[in-house]
Length: 150
Image 1: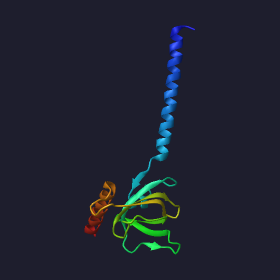
Image 2: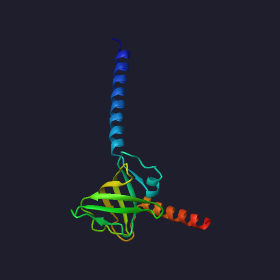
Image 3: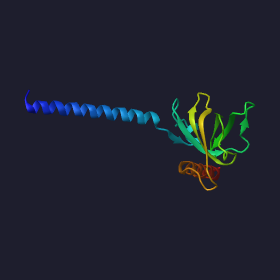
Image 4: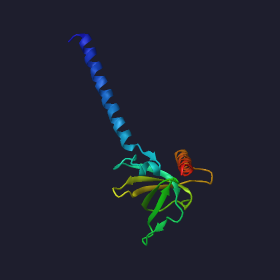
């Protein structure tokens, strides 16, 4: 075999290994990627079904319902325009309460109920995830515009 053929064969082998490694990394990255959606996007059908994602907003006043088992909790997340019912089984963060910001991670069921696997509460009075604050502000502006048209 000529030296030139050996180099081409070696280069082709290295390129195929590189392509394989990149494909594995991208597949692992895609499986672990979690997107953020607002309640308005979830209600509009823009959120994925059968995939894990996050929903953020405010915990609606009067919506927290604890089950007798002490671990199962139902509540509603809102962006002041739309609401998403959430069920969660586990221990809630200490700062989780009605009227405060929260981000939940899980999957949307076929009945429209979001089953959370993780609940994140804001850590002080001034903090809210940028996406959640933007969603709340956008929803309030849209609601104000609709009320002015009526």
